[in-house]
Length: 308
Image 1 (spheres, rainbow, N blue to C red):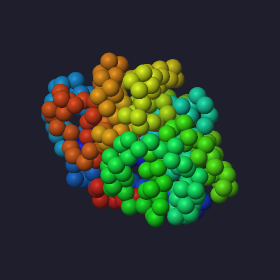
Image 2 (image 1 turned 45 degrees about the vertical axis):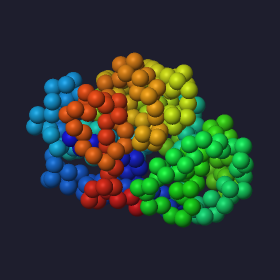
Image 3 (image 1 turned 120 degrees about the vertical axis):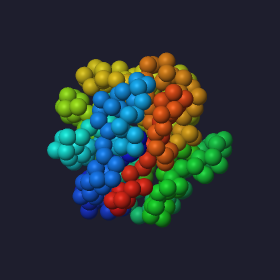
């Protein structure tokens, strides 16, 4: 089977001219392409595969996954899937629902989408100091992050610094400084899918899964901190009535973003399966040997999936 990963699926916003998104018209074209070329796996067939009953007729077919519970998933994606009789897996970071604040990772996206990348990078370099960025793992993160993205000048480096290099204790304050400097105001009210909307999606046959609490790079955290990220996120989804089978998606994806503690904790929490980011199909043996890091293709690897 082919699991496909999506993030922003929406229409162009002139207030964020550099925002990386998949236009909803191209999303529809890509679904048409998948239907004609591969077909879509039924949810029951996927559940059977996860339970160890093999792929059967679903070998080579498509399943759809969507990260970060952004409002565009409810406004654009959900109606399109319902119209076509399709289902999808939607991964939710739960912290915004308990704090009323945008996650730092999304604040970074918004700044990069609205501002000139070179100016943003220059301001960032002006305000960070050496003590904010530990030297361990820097080479690994630099070589293994954002290599598949075609960003405007400065944006990839801003993302590397704020998502990977900087200590989390400093990140929020640095982002606040950037927003003040460029007079940018964050609006959380319509950024995420509301809890009642998540419940509506779940009741309509969509799968709602955990994307941790705060979307951290899990490999940067202690085992105890990772455990809190996993267990608290599932507890919130259960409390709002959206938790069916337990499924999880690694924030940022890729082997650099999690470690053996993460995989062990997912197994201990009874998580049925989790997704990584790796550009290959899911094989029958994956559910036996690596069910907590199943591969996903980025949508931009297929026709009509290129971010604009």
